Image 1 (spheres, one colour):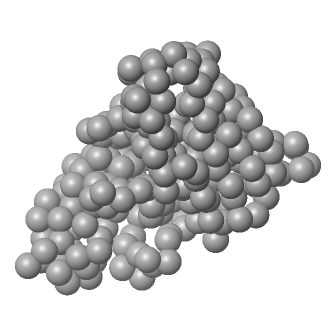
Image 2 (cartoon, each protein chain N blue to C red):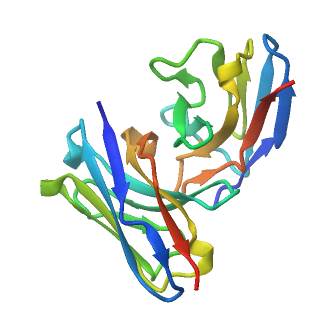
Image 3 (cartoon, chains in turn purple, cyan):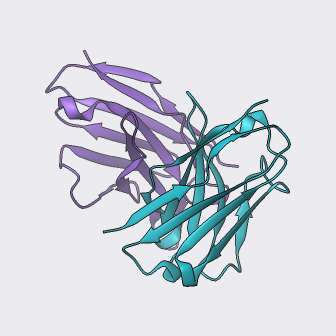
Length: 113
Length: 118
């Protein structure tokens, strides 16, 4: 199984500042024949299901604010929120869909400082 | 608008069974694979099972293999999870999720809570 490890486990950032969450996979999730990383980022607010923010490591889903961006390839990935807003308080998960079983990071809890 | 509505959760004793359902709407159900993912209280997300569009390709997490059975009825736009021999560690909020291309989970339901306790 591919193990997904996020860092940090929790993060407190001031409004308007940058937030950065890292995700490392135990093996590459890059499908080299099509040059795509099978890596997604989800946002989960209390009492809600996960919401897909980023697919293929860096493709922002429709309707997701452009302050959210994803980067990385192979085994190392980053979710960046360029200017934190109050509504961004949530738990963020990375997720690999490269192989079965699909696996998730342990989550990063993002709070306002 | 894609909608996924889970039902069938509840309180059940260890060793007993429960069947979860997921009613899908807003998309062509039989074009897509479907998944179950669970979230134990205070824990993260754990993938449970998946089924492709025509039920020919089914996978399970090792933690539920041999106890859970996933199925679908394309005529009813519905996904199911039959859970047998339930254990306390199966206690979780169970989400159904639609898979886009290549297994990406793009839409999730609100979940149904399963509590396994005596």
